[in-house]
Each structure stands twice: as C-alpha cells, then as structure tokens.
Image 1: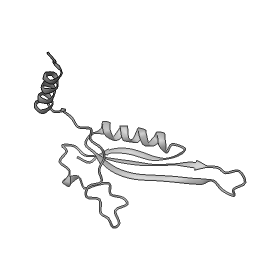
Image 2 (image 1 turned 90 degrees about the vertical axis):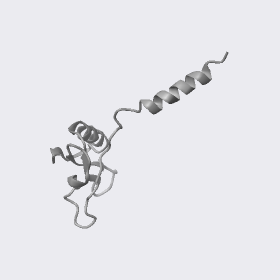
Image 3 (image 1 turned 45 degrees about the vertical axis):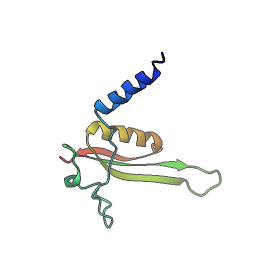
Length: 112
C-alpha cells in the first residue's frame, strides 16, 4: 500500500487549517504624495498596523577610476514605513551592507 497520497492529503489539510502565523512584512510608501513628497515616507493613517515606524536611509557607493578628474558617487535615499522597529532595522542593515561606501543618514522613528 502506498502511503504517499495519504501523507500529501494530510499535509494539504494542515496547510489549510494552520496557515503561517506571520507573513514577512516589508516596507511600504502607501500615501506618499507624488508631488513634493520627498520628505514624506507614507501616510500612517492609511496603514492597518498597530504601530508604524518610519525608516529613512541615505548612503552611497563611490567608484574611483584611475585618471578620472573626480570620483563617481551612486547615492541612495529612501523613506519607507514598517509595522515594527525590528523590520525597519533589518531593512537598514541590508541597505548599509549594499550602500555603505559613503556614509549618509539612517533612522527608525516611531510614528504611532
């Protein structure tokens, strides 16, 4: 007797009855005005989260080409909102790893 179909059926039932408890939340810019919105990360009143954290990161990478008159800098400046400080800090750590050549400014600020 093949037990594989029975195991697959049990697994499918468990997946339906016991969904994952927490989805991996990512930052959002919901409610950011398209015009003159450079200082606004999101509109916290539009987000369903109990707490809203504003994450701001700026930093860059400098590349030096021999014989060039100046260095080339790729600058990254972004503001996003997160449901927790932990997720905001995780995002910032990833950004610092990627754009840590020229140090800028970063913060996580509780909005509500």
